[in-house]
Each structure stands twice: as C-alpha cells, then as structure tokens.
Image (cartoon, rainbow, N blue to C red; front, side, top):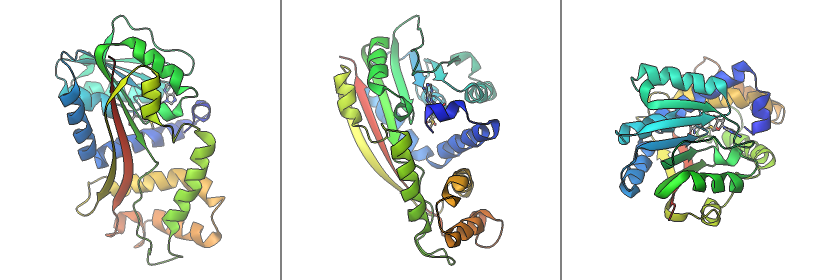
Amino acid sequence: MAHHEHQHSTEADESTQIAMLDLDAEVLHEHLSEIIATLRDLAEPPVRRILDLGSGSGTGTFALLDRFEQATATAVDASAPMLEHLAAKAAERGVGDRIGTVQADLDESFPQLDDPVDLVWASASMHHLSDPARVLSEVFAAVRPGGLLAVAELEGFPRFLPDDLGFGRSGLEARCHELLAQMRAELLPHISADWGELLTEAGFTVAAQRTSDIHLTAPLPAGTARYAEAALSRMRPFLAARLDTDDVAALDTLLADGPGGLEHRDDLTVRTERTFLVARRP
Ligand SMILES: C[S@@+](CC[C@H](N)C(=O)[O-])C[C@H]1O[C@@H](n2cnc3c(N)ncnc32)[C@H](O)[C@@H]1O
C-alpha cells in the first residue's frame, strides 16, 4: 500500500493489514530464520542497538531480538495502530523493556537518535517511500562504521492456488496477480528498484544479496489458508471491479465456507520470491 493511501486507510483496513503481516510471519517463518542467521554471521559485534524501519506489526523486530540477545530495538512506523499492536505483542512476549516505538513518516523526516545504531532492518518498507535514496543516505548517517543495513523486498503476495480449482476458468490466480502487479507498478514506483545499486550509491558496501524462490508444499504452516483468505478478501474489491463475472464467482467460492473454500482445500501451496540484501557501512 502506498503511503498516501495509507493515511486514508480505515481502521478495518489497518487491522486486516496487521493480521496479514502476522500471518506472513507465521507462514514464512523458516525463510525469516534463514535470513536472520545470515545477518548474524555477517554482523560485527557488538550489536546493541537495532532500528526497524517500517516495522509494521514487528515481525523483524522480534526475530532480531531473539537472535541478538544483548540488543534493544527501536521500531519506526507511520502507523499508530501497527505500533500499538507491536507494543502489546512485546509485552506479551516479555520483551517490552527491550523495544521502543517511534511513530514517524520517513517521507517527512528521519527519527532523531541519541547514538549510532549497529543494525538497521527494513523489510517490505523501502518500496513504500517516495524517495528511498534520500532515506538510505539518512540510514547511512545513523549506522556506525562496520554496522549493517538489511533490506528485504518481495514481489507481492504469495501464490497459493493450483491453475485448475475444480470450478471456473483455469488460471484465476495468475489473472489476479497480473492485475495486482499493474496496480503496484502504478502506486509503488520503487517496487522494482535495484536495491544493490541504491545501497551502493548511499555509501554502503553490499555484503550479501540473494533472491529466494520459495515453494512450500504440504504439510503447510498452520496459517496458510487464513493468509490466502486475508490476502484475497483484502484485494477482492479491486479485483472484482476488473475480473469478468465468472472469475468473480470463482473468487467468491474460494472465499466462502463451502467445499471449494480455501479453508477446506488440500491443494494449496505457497510460492513467492523474496530478495534480501545486507550492506555494510565501511
Ligand atoms: C508491508 S509492511 C512491512 C512491515 C514489516 N517490516 C514486515 O516485514 O512485516 C510496510 C510497513 O511500512 C510502513 N510504512 C509505509 N510507508 C511509510 C513511511 N513513509 N514512513 C514510515 N513507515 C511507513 C507501513 O505502515 C507498514 O507498516
């Protein structure tokens, strides 16, 4: 979601977005653990201060605090409900005293920090910014020499469905993703940015870069069907206005509580592409 849209988002939108981020963390848990392990290998200790930019519901913040036991984290997000949810989760997990939250719009200003940070994490947030290059130069100034910036980016929602659903015309999900990709290209001009180049231009040295083709099959993580349902129902108004009526009917069968519905299917998979870069301030 683009930031300007974000400002006008309703409370209901915001709580679906929070639920989706939490489900993404649950379903792609293994991938997150792998990239955080890479980060741990590359980090030059000590890692005491972590900054999570566009923290959302705190997926990265919590995973990082688990791996960097001596660290405290500052979670920055433009959205107050996201940060409230994150703070409540921090208290539940017993790490409330290791996390501070700052509500800030990174398009307007970079948060003031008392000390340089050892590690900055920006997951699926950089592409929302109107001028990522400007923010990256501010990140560079905020990181200590030898410190790291990790950028994780994604091509969109995962794909969950087979081509043939057993009803409707084959290829529904591909048609939905084509429409969603067009929308992203219009609203989020930096979605396909060359992050390696932007990090280098900001003064960082790229220490690791990889794109993972994730393909999970049964047994799938528990939240998979709920994640697919949350993603498709959130996008339904946009898709329903553009798909033909047969496709809209098939989409509604998937979202309904019948035998073709997502919760009852045994043919779901999870396919997605995630890019991860680690950069060091020389
Ligand atoms: C797709 S979510 C990713 C959340 C989290 N990092 C994760 O990986 O689960 C993007 C987050 O960036 C935040 N965001 C978008 N534009 C922002 C801006 N200009 N300033 C601060 N936060 C922003 C949104 O509120 C949202 O929480």
